[in-house]
Length: 396
Image (tube, rainbow, N blue to C red):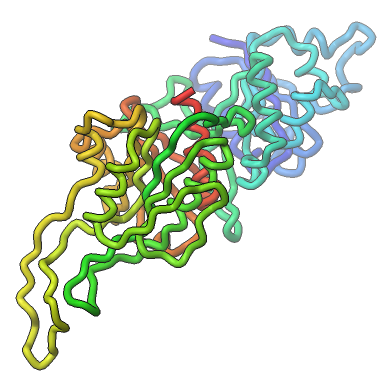
């Protein structure tokens, strides 16, 4: 069993460290806790020490015989160092090599493997500064455990650690992973990205249509993010009241047939991201307005063209084919089945049983051949940047 040096940061998730100590001890590991000044506001040294059955250290100057460089001995006596929770402040200090208290001094002095479990407000986690710091730590050899999403405050949400047994667990779809892509790696220069967005309107008569509530916001955000990354972007958009993002070539359509034709004539493309909520059914429209006095019309529905499936089977299939699955129940399983049936590389699944359609926030799962990635709730612009970053990583 391992000798673990546990550094407890000063965040609300610090209370999770108590459960973590319990799990580590149950697995037979030896735990030496280090409690930061911030951590003392959330857990007590007595609680940590009792569970760890070990002395809790909190001050650089309380180590016995510091003249013998006690902090060096403490950091190297462990087999690995675990920082949980790792606050944004701790991550920044680690990335910069700052050693202004016991915890950061130990981290700078250790020659053992270091694992950090970040936990913070989701805005702080997605901030460019945090991304830079995490990238630097990973480059330095630090193992970063992606945080899960916890209780929300307002609309921002919190990122939290989730104590796990040392062996870990797997979901029905393989290991669920959280994604964070450094922004500075995002480049699609020289590539053609094809995006569809918005609803389609299938006419019933000259004044009525079959439609849905899609606003086009997510698709337009993806087109904008791809253009910002340097791609040549073609946006095939259904009827929405949105301005085309700068640098994007917009093709306006109304029906599923028109959208399918526009997509096919826009090929070849390096990647196609089909976000549009295309109507599944259409009817042969009446040439004149249907009258209420004539009673309910007898409409004969026929399927619309399946653009994702057509692209999947096309001789001009993009290198990366991404579909969207808007579902109201069994979201992940429905998306897994769609990816396989339509021969897509990825499917982005989102639960639209709430206010996603027309709203400005989204929470998605990315379904790939490797499994399911659960992404944090974020604005549609943030989801777009994350997806475009993944596309750039894949195509690069």
